[in-house]
Image (cartoon, rainbow, N blue to C red; front, side, top):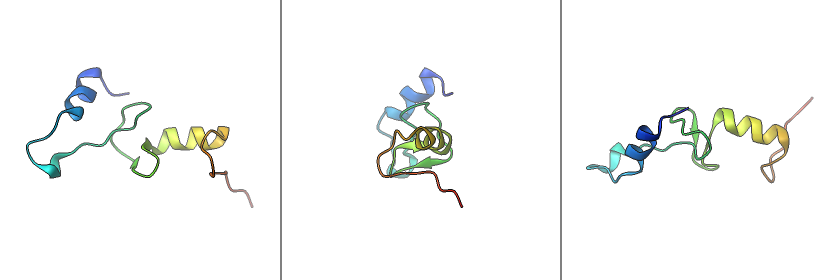
Length: 61
């Protein structure tokens, strides 16, 4: 879980556009981020398993 200071720092407009840090809107994690869902891979998996993300279903074969 990211600290409040890290989240606040990533919200500020960076000096250069390549320094943008995208964070998970749920936990603040920056690694394993999925832009399409605005979530990290861990939160995505939890919400997908619960059926909280529309159109996403856990596959089984």
